[in-house]
Length: 259
Image (cartoon, rainbow, N blue to C red; front, top):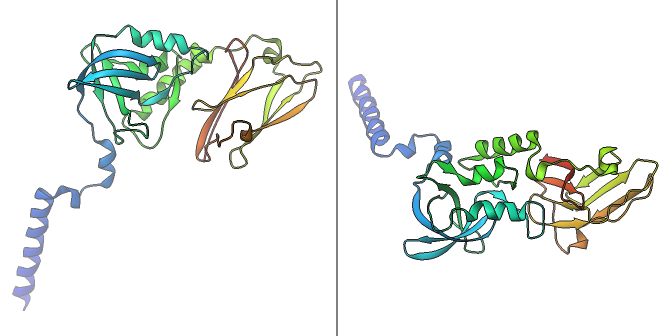
């Protein structure tokens, strides 16, 4: 009986060894799935829509490409022209596209990282380093650390969208964010100075493209803004960014949160 047990044990060990060779996914760490590196695909940049969306010729097809990890300002917003012009220098040139876990978005656009100069220039990162765009990350993706580091660098240097406002009410720190309630879809701001703040043209935006235009605040006045103004939910319960810009598109307040 002992001999039979030993033989059975050895057979089980042998079978496990075979499975580990031919079926590594059964014994590998599931987290390895997140570290898959997709190959780069050669394409030609045809035209630029804005600072995060381009058209590229891929295998003979005109494909709309939404650049991963970033969000560019809308038209007439600060750095909208700069981000678009940056990409336009690569029009009619060979670029390299790399996908991540998600292949397309709900608009059937290809989600891609974009490289130039034989793959040596990572354009998504360069846009962030210049401060022309902000991060737009969802889930665990290949270059999250690099993307966050690039934005932090631009923020520390005060580049692009991170340039500080020189308006008196901003310099004097008059305006503060009292509350941002993602669940209630409300944020509240206050003028804590003893003089009124002319906030004509000032606006608040989230990580994406939702924009609230602000009204003036008298001294010590508080004011709440609801997403009902935009007719949709804006603030992501799991995490988002709050930007406040003056009429020149210079940063007054930046606040980020996560669940």
